[in-house]
Structure formats: C-alpha cells, structure tokens
Image 1 (cartoon, one colour):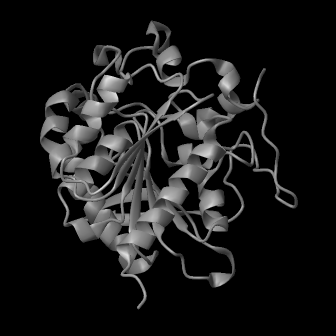
Image 2: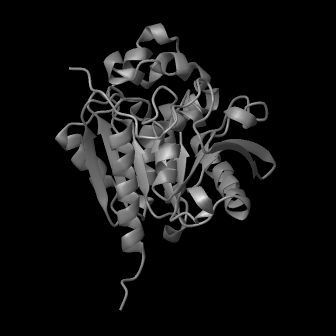
Length: 305
C-alpha cells in the first residue's frame, strides 16, 4: 500500500516553486565568497534552542530541505515549529557561489568555506549551539567539519544517505540520469508525494567537477576523518538506499570507525529512498533527527544541582 501523510490543521500548503511560510533567503559571506542559504526561525521572535545547519547532497540545493510537494516534507518549517532555527546552505559550487566556484570545491576546501560562512551566520543571523544535519555528500561534509573542529563547536551530527562502503560504482556520478542514477537517487517512485518530480526541478543543480572527484575519494578520506569526530553521531539508512552497503557487518564497522565519538547511533528507515527528505518518510526522519538534537542538548548541559 502506498504510504500517505496528513497535513496539519491551519497549515498553509507551500506555493509551487516557492518557499514554505516562514522561510527566507539570505546570503552569507564566506571569506569573500557568497553562499546563499534558506533560514527559518521560531515564531514570535523566540530565541532558538539550537540552530540546525542542513547540508544538501550532490546535484541538489538548499531547497532539498524545504520540499514543496507536501507541507509535511519541509525540515525548515518543522524545525522552526519545534523551537529550532534551521539554516540550509547552498554548499560551495551551488547557488550564489556557483559563478565564483564553477568547478566547485573538494571536500576539505568546502570545510574551510563553510566554516567561514557559519561564522558570518552566527555573527548576523543565528544564535544558539549548532547541530549539523547532512545528506549524502552533505553528510560527508558534516563529518569533515566535525573532524576538523574542536568538540564544542557542534552539538552533534545527523547523517543520512551516506556510509563508508559503496554498494554502487561512484563512476556513475556526473553521468546522464538514464545510466541508472534515477534508481540510485530515488528508489521506487511511490516513496514520494505526488508532484515531487515537478517541484524538484527547482532544487536540482549540476554536480561540480571537483565535488565529483572528491566523492570518488571518499573511501580514503573517510578512513582518516571518522576517527577524528568527537561529538555524538547518528546515521540513517533508507530501506531503499542503493548507494551504500548497509548490512549488519557494514554498519558495525562504520560505527567502529567513529572511535572518538561519545555516542554513535545507526538507524534504518522503512519506506524511504536515498532522497529521504523529499519523500513520505521525510517527517518521521526529521522528527527522529530533531529528537537526537534534543538528546545532544540535554547531555551537553551539566545537570542542575
């Protein structure tokens, strides 16, 4: 049976090709390079409990986290309703930075650029501790950011669509969709609300060349980066994930690689494909990710006497 979702009472549906209510566009200064972003904040001027920094995958954009096919899909609106700010970046080579970085950047160069952009965001736009949520290549970036930062820089990481043992050839990256990328990136089409593939045209973008090169090098990079992550990490693997191996032995080894992390959780999400945040499973995934943020907040604070 095809899963369904139900809109919340009094919630306006998103406008086609636009942004969900309460979401606005901003531009950040990353040491002279502009990075565009989407920002949502709690209503009524309430200070956020934390800021979720959402990092999209290859060939997408920040709009991945503000899906327009159904009101339940957007992480930006859900996070704001639950008291968090959500800052979804267009990663280097996408959005406003694309003319400045037409070939994009390798993973470790993106770390430096995004750190500069986050410093600007904290100075001008957001408050509270930062929590990283990354999908696919954005998950690799989240792990690399944490590996290169002091442990008090981020509350924790939530990663989807990213593992360490590929199940499909990374040589497919950058090729035409007919080569099998549609199946790898989406899985069965019934996993997504009606209208998804009409609305998604506004958020897809070419994957820059340097990013493709970096994705192909992930096996060696992950072996160096994962042991250096010193904050809690949660991984989610979609039921129909086809890019990454997710057998029990694969996931046990993945968790073991994060030897310095104080806590590592690995979750499997039924009824989901690789692009989790655009599917019917988006809301349960986002709720679980935000619940993990709450756990990280609670454990990061000293208990009251």
